[in-house]
Image (cartoon, rainbow, N blue to C red):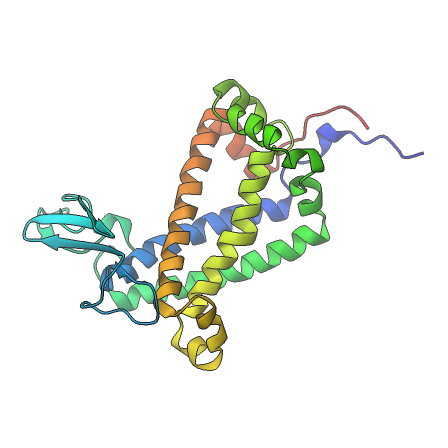
Length: 270
């Protein structure tokens, strides 16, 4: 007969999860901001192997006279004051794709942007690898992210999604096991988006392309890898924004403290 275990005394977030959460959050923020600096050097995205100013870009941020714009395919959206054409803190008009407050460094420097990006990319990659190994070792993935058979039913997924639109359900979700929407989101981020960021980053490297061209060919060329890299970054930024909204709605102080101290699982004795 197994001994009773007080679930309420078990931490909701393990130490490795908490450490990875904060290190990952810092790395992704700095990677995004330094990545925007690199993007400013050539604010266009292409599909295929090559990309130059005369080639057709499926996405471009630019400036025409005094008007900034974002072009997606043939659709053009004016972004004056935010993208392509904006004013710095001294009131001077700048024409970088992304403004200085969104980039590292705040001034345009491709060399510095690359240094920041590559340094934190290695920390991020190492952290993700260690987190995955540790999560398999302590069964975090099997216990917290495993999808049970009934959770795959469309009705169950729809009910979980509908609960995410109700503030009362969001406030109660922090004290419960992960629901199907949370599981799918975390699985998608940890096992799809984050590895995809690393692989596309490597595929853009000239050294990787020269020694292991199969990785670059897998994405259809370096420019395609760059496009996928940028789209993945956009999805991660979107996930972050939704995550922050959920934290704010479910009790930001309690949620933040739980991610610092571990929190407690609520439940009956087993």
